[in-house]
Length: 256
Image (cartoon, rainbow, N blue to C red; front, side, top):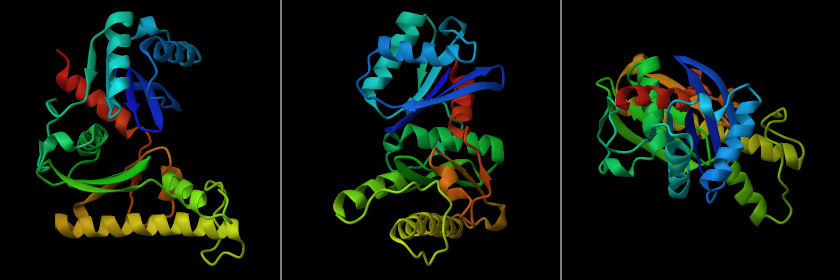
């Protein structure tokens, strides 16, 4: 069982051998106890014919400390299986060249491991979430660092909360022309095209600093990614399960 516990959403995946058998997505609730997490997992798993007793090990990536403890308790005490949490001390196969390696979010490391293994290096990884992160791994397999910007939905919530005449819109609706002719479409235009342009601009700057020319791969993942990816010119691959695949790779590298 692999769990990508983000600030807003949690993505769960079950691997059987190398096959990602099933995935689920649920809201992240930071103060849920192990029993509550277990009950939610059991209910979701049952929809695909999987029971908690079928799980032989668990690995999670999370920057929400209370939930790390809850999943650890669920795995070790309630399910009786080995538990692994992604940390700075874990074997990754990457040289971490961040000024303070412990400051790198676990999801950024997991994505970098997966992208490097599955798509080769040098590689740029864009993860759309509560925050959007853009990370770089060079040709030697070194994690260099990257950029962090507000997630598209966080930005939308901030705008409508501070502008009395603006209301929230569904960004997944068909995007209009850039020169929109009504307020909801103007918001969609600004957020979708503007955000895609910002991501493309960061990627181009990353490519210049990597100095690897056309050999640089660009991979995107994350829940909100489908809203943006089709409008980005620099993103080559969209892999919605990238983080889960990275967790599986890290489990195999670190399992006793």
